[in-house]
Length: 340
Image 1 (cartoon, one colour):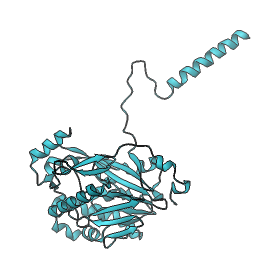
Image 2 (cartoon, rainbow, N blue to C red):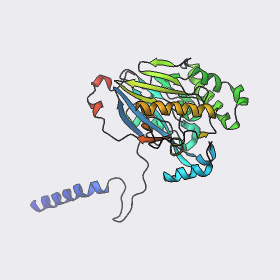
Image 3 (cartoon, rainbow, N blue to C red):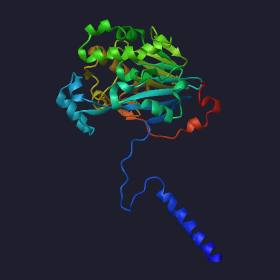
Image 4 (cartoon, helix red, strand yellow):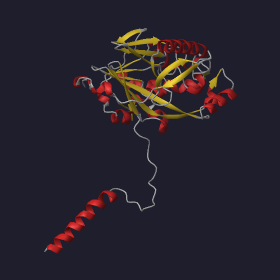
């Protein structure tokens, strides 16, 4: 009996040691595990009392040397090389979620299904970050290009059924009218279908409310017209407890080029001259005031600061320094998640 007990205990110990090593996939001693997918694309920080969550929708190969204008192609290639990049650049598609404590507000929605496998990750990343799409009550769009509105739908259905969609009326009037295709180059024609198809369900549900002018749209959220890339392109200035974040949409597409050379425009700009002027104005204010920036197409998480270059030419992007959410830990529990 004693010997049987010893055998049983020996086998039990062996099982306890070996089982954790053999659960799931089984590998021989020298086997290399297969490559793994990227981690969930969300990043969190505080701006005053507002929680900001950057959400990655995807990355898209961007032909910087072909699409940038107002700058020699050789200079574009050289500037990319200085940043250990080359065309096509993997351009980030970012959106930003603001938890004010009373509302959950999304700024832009990514490309969704409209960019194929290059987009459509935002919904999964939103959930991974601890939120559900049904909790979003307001969505503010910087403009109605496909990589900012496409994430409103999934297989033709509204992803955010409880959210009201807001955008500049100037932009809505332009992109929701197919007759305006005759006013733009063919490269911009897909923007009309993208805007119309993704917004129609929200319009039919009475969930679409464009705004007419600059000014405060919600407590602490101010709209600022920044036309050029799109007729009604809008920057949102978000302020809480003395800190300010600018959500600036498509002020920048290719960071290694357009920060040091703000005069470089892009073929997707409906008015390149106005786009350059808007960029210059926003850069100057952001650098002078030390605002936080949330940028749609700067490498994820797209959050940082802009500062003037010491040589007096152009600007420098300073990405956020990774940190724990210590401020959030101290927040009252009732402000951690807004009401559904």
